[in-house]
Image (tube, rainbow, N blue to C red; front, side, top):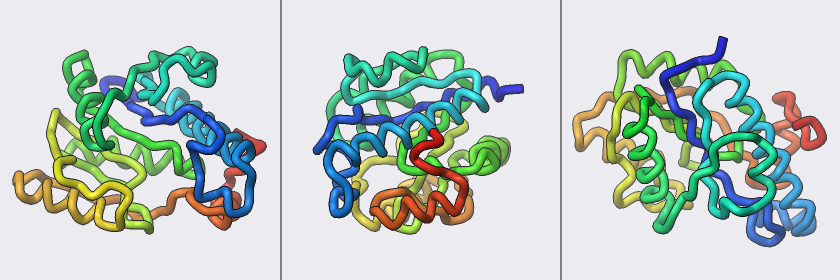
Length: 203
C-alpha cells in the first residue's frame, strides 16, 4: 500500500545536454551526461510513485517532453535560488490536502526505499527530517508542517546541511538526521551507485 497524506515533491531539471550533470563531463560527453541525468531522474520518480500516492514534479521547464511521460502533475519551480524554489513548492503542497511534505532531488537514484519510509516515519516525532550526504548537503527534506528553513543558505557549498540545521535550531524546531549517504555527482559515483544496486541502464 502506498503512503498517503504526504506530498512528494521531486525537484528536477530537464535533461538538456550541457546544462545538467556537468561534473560528469570529465569522463562523459554532454549528451551522455544528460542521458545519465534522465536515467537518474526516472529512477527517483518511479520509486516515489511506487511508494507514495501524491507525487509531483517541480520542473525548471514544464514544457520539456521528458516530463510528459510520467503522467504526473508538473509544476513550475519558478524564479529564485533553490531555497526560494523549494519554499514555493512547499507552500503549494500545504495549501492543498497534504499533511506533510517530502522534497527530493534526482542525484540519489541508489536511495533505498527504507530511507524514504524512515524519513516519513520520523515525522511523527519531529518537525524536520534531513538526509545528509557526504558533500555537506542532503538528499531529502521532510516537513510535518509548513516551515521556512532555507533562508540564507549558501547553496552548492559544503555548508548547506550545517546552515539548514542552524536555521532549524534558531527557530527551535525539532530535527532528526538520517544516516549519511552520497549523491551521484562525479563519474566515480556511478560505480558507487552500482554497488548499491543502481545502474544507468536499469532505471
